[in-house]
Length: 282
Image (cartoon, rainbow, N blue to C red; front, side, top):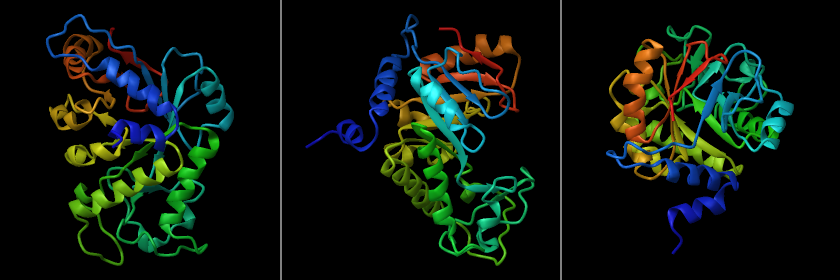
């Protein structure tokens, strides 16, 4: 009977093997102070992309990054990840008007230019006749067509969000509803031969780790919740971690040793997610 890793290698592109090897090389024992992590990654959602950066993984905005940039990075042997909202819809995206109003929440107080997606109404047709499910599939197709190796699907934790109001009203979205939706995203990405990361949704990480190839986490060190990602590290799946708070010095001296012991690939970024990046020393 094939192992989980053998099954995944057959399911998705050969890039998965590269990521799996990197993750295995990075997995270190807690007391191994001499371990070196070979992986660097770069997430950038604003500003011009420098394809000559030494990072091995580039996580870039799927809508705004041209296929030519993705192709150039792929030609350099980089792993390219497509950042795309799949759990909320931004009002500045080209397909925003295609979503049925019934499938979207009222304005998100935290992110005023976004509306949560009602994952209970994925099959309600919008103005063009396409359902939210079909429009999300089209977003994944865009990532695939541009040549990205994987997907970083954001805002996939509506079940835990506070102050979410849908019109017309629907029942409360449950933990189980979110698991079903997030597993559907993973299946859709894999069906396209792409890697897929669990973005956020840290409280469901242990349940969802078997279905995702890596995790993209924001601020687990700041919130003291990195232990919830052990489903990924125990399976030798990469955790790509972003921290924002604190000084650069405290990041290097305080966060980086913890990240190294956990086997995380951690960077410090500005909230704008521009080109500036501080990597942990190797």
